[in-house]
Image (cartoon, rainbow, N blue to C red; front, side):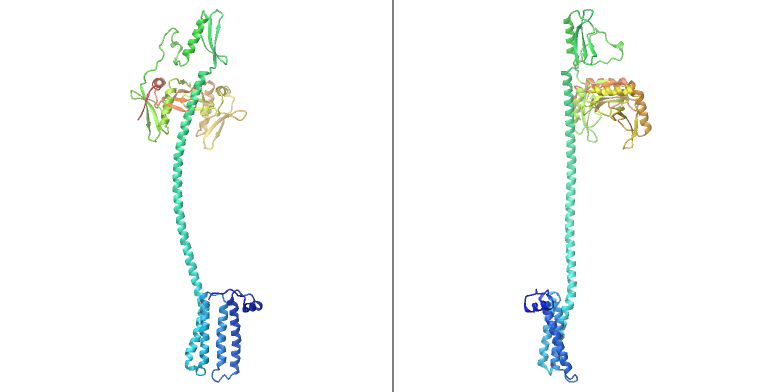
Length: 524
């Protein structure tokens, strides 16, 4: 029987008022049975003592004692919070034991004939009560423990299944993350390519804007005047006051001077440059020449993909020689083709930068700021400005100040975070006015670089880079090479091979100038 909740009956009320509030109805009921057993036991013992102990077994003392023993055992067991099965066995055992009592009464005094059965029935009741009150709780506790262990094992298995599921989900998420990272890398590559195209477009727009600006806005003016000999002359004077060109001869009539001036206006724009090494080689003034005409190119641009998956171009002469190549790879064939377009535009008008043995290059960087760098004829950059300037003249003046004050300036030699040695020059306001531009593996190496700058800088010429310029330099193997450098510092093309003599490098440049502008393009 399951433990009953306490009810508001007379027994429970009496128990609550005399002993305490019961937790269950069995608590009050068990106490009543226990108390009744005590009373019956006392009465039975008293009757037994009052009878003759040496005579036959007395009837009523035995009955009372038998009933009292059952009640004394059943009462405390019923009060305990036992399992339903234990309570059922206690009640069942009590009923069997009590059933033996009336059997004894009806069989008395000849009960000895059936004594074994009466005593057996009574003992069976006591044994069942003992099983319900002692063994069932113990075995039930073990069963509960086994059930709890089984429940925990089932929970562990469930958790293991959940953990396995979570691991599978984690692997799926990791695979998805790897796919996302791969997609991100692909997207980054596409973005880099778009940015490169955009940078090329911006550079092309800047070049076009510079060309339009140069065409539309001159920094000089023609001045027409009559000299002391009453002859008419003209001169072209820059706004800084320098005379950058004049008529060279006088005209008897003003009209003729104006015609000469107009001829210069028409022919100066687009005129080619002829480099003459010595003055005695200058042609006579009356020597005629044919204007340069566009000749059919004897070269072909070849765009190819190298072993690293980069796209490159090379300009191959009809005789099979490669007279120029890109010097660097591009992420796509379209970028390589755009580079070819720039070479077509820049190569022919590009001027020479002659370093003897060094020279200051004044150029505009990718951020549209003007900078200077000190370049040796072997191509090494000995120093750079360290900062950009908004105007070309500011960069030139900074280079002039370095040339003039080189002996008074103090070079600071230091070790950078990468463990390389560098030098720098700072102005009075702690601004860096020049630095090494590159690191050296030893302090002695950077000190030798400082000494070279101190020796070369005062006599170095300042060379302006237009949109692009050819540089001829001597490499470490003692061979002469050329490279076409954009004004932002990028190398647009190089010779790809070395020449034993400097003049051969210049001849190679002239071949590029002739063949690059209108060479056809093919994919190999």
